[in-house]
Length: 102
Image 1 (tube, rainbow, N blue to C red):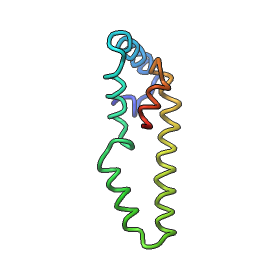
Image 2 (spheres, one colour):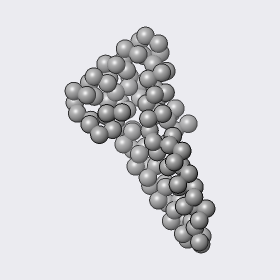
Image 3 (cartoon, rainbow, N blue to C red):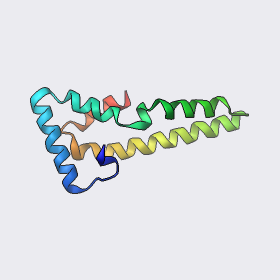
């Protein structure tokens, strides 16, 4: 949770050590699931519901298109941030990203 606001070197190193230990001990599934569940843009029902309501309430096709573009840009921005961060923490960042996007 803390890394969302504080991505300092020491914190990232600590997180990586924890992720590596979990990977060694149990395959890392729990830590990966916990990380994915903490990503609000992908898992937060309130955010998803808000976006769906905005789209449903669009008054025209162009309003709907703008809403889809807004949501797409928001998701793309979050994915890019995750793609930059995951390799710093997780030994198998590709696996985590694939699960995140699943």
